[in-house]
Image 1 (cartoon, rainbow, N blue to C red):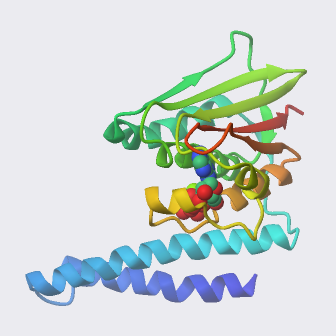
Image 2: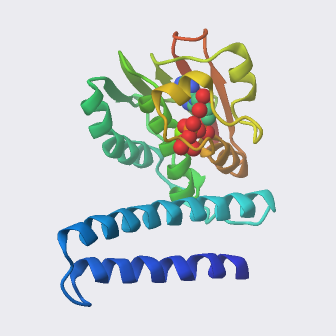
Image 3: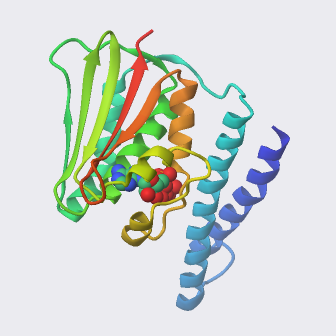
Length: 222
Ligand SMILES: Nc1ncnc2c1ncn2[C@@H]1O[C@H](COP(=O)(O)OP(=O)(O)OP(=O)(O)O)[C@@H](O)[C@H]1O
Ligand SMILES: [Mg+2]
């Protein structure tokens, strides 16, 4: 898409020149300027991430085929995401565990990069919205389908939130805003779109505010 190119090119240039300036490629940079350029660099990186997410989102909404489907290991994706989020869980002093089934785990037909992103968004949420206890991720094989349950002991959700949490209109829960102020309220929407594109199912459960949440997804293996 042409728009993609137009949005990404200037940002890439911006990031590149900021990085070179920081490295001193255009002359010596004083401490004060270095700090400010550093802020610009970090903001540019955040903006690039956001632009990429919105571009993915608009493509998903247009129904464009953005998935690159191949045989993929869900186990690897889960292990990978957990390794990435683990330090955040450790910092908070909460557990983050992965339980795999005893039986052989079939490969899934999936876009490993996109599905990993969806799993990342779900597991990252669980860790972000949990202050005590922790997050248990389980992979289960049920009726030939792969089921993933991400169960946390965190802030939980009201019945209203459970109902609306995946919709585009719903942005952020009141409690979530208090716990994690920087959220943008699009992670779940992106995750749900990716999972639906995979012809999978995703849903949320919670016994109520303060009582933890579970996010479940189901994927076909062929
Ligand atoms: N594990 C969870 N426990 C409780 N509430 C959750 C959980 N995951 C998501 N939510 C609720 O759903 C809302 C939307 O989640 P989503 O990931 O889309 O956005 P976010 O986490 O607020 O921001 P970001 O887009 O930066 O991820 C959250 O703000 C929160 O209210
Ligand atoms: Mg989130």
